[in-house]
Image (cartoon, rainbow, N blue to C red; front, side, top):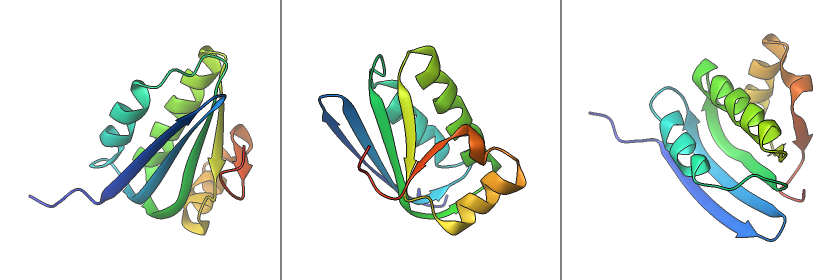
Length: 109
């Protein structure tokens, strides 16, 4: 069994919750991100997902981001993707989903 190739850090502050993701976003690691974000209250909050240390993202990562976006919208919250690396941007561009996300250069919401 391969080790999980993902690190997560969650920081909750008034008005914004920052989740820093490092490693790969794929079918093996996305459930870890989902479990961590499912426990977060998004009502009226900004969820800033820092992807600057993501080394690879596949369609599982995209699906996880879309699901998180839909949840944030349903709960009247906002999702910001911060520091999205080039490879992940390419996935967003190839699938025509880049415009669905608010992209930020860093964690400042």
